[in-house]
Amino acid sequence: SKLAWIEGFDTLVVRDMMTRKNSRYSLTDNCHSECVLSFSLDGHRIFLQGPNEWLDLASGKFTRLETELPSYFSPTGQYAAYSVGRGAGELNNHLVVLDIQTNQIVFESKIADVRSDNLNWNPDGSILSWVAVPEIGNVQLGLTRIPTGETSYLFINDIGWPVSNAWS
Image 1 (cartoon, rainbow, N blue to C red):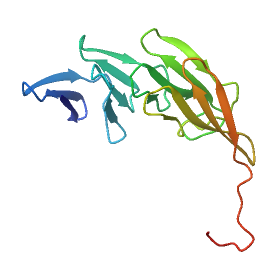
Image 2 (image 1 turned 90 degrees about the vertical axis):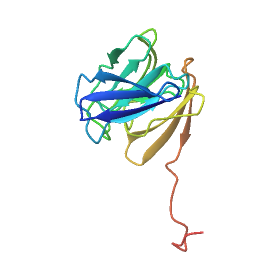
Image 3 (image 1 turned 135 degrees about the vertical axis):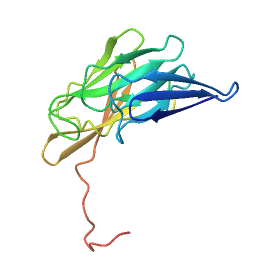
Image 4 (image 1 turned 60 degrees about the vertical axis):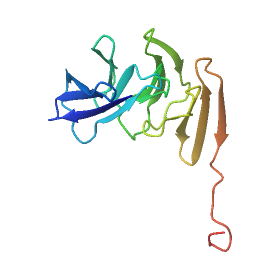
């Protein structure tokens, strides 16, 4: 098992808990408070959300996603989901899922106006949920199977207060 942390904003430290040895990797961009680390399930990669890159622990090589928006890596470490468009939390974004092993796009949303900060993977990395607002008052939850791209939509625009205006 391994433990990882950022040291001094510019160094990723990975500690092997069995051997108690640390490996140090220089970051291409400084990591500040917005940098979040996570391991792939197999433990072979560390993902850095913030600079949108990952480290392959076997080769020591960093790979960067070509987006400035937050990236959401699947739990298996095979896919990265991100949106391209105006900016984080903004509408007019287009959802993209990239297979990071092949560097191929496996899914692109046909709906614009995807909220880039509402992307969530299920635990095995086979389904991605995302929120789209294609028009005012029309909110949709997209559930996409990856890598097939089969997508179901739940329309949640009928949410309203009960007549009593009270919680139930």
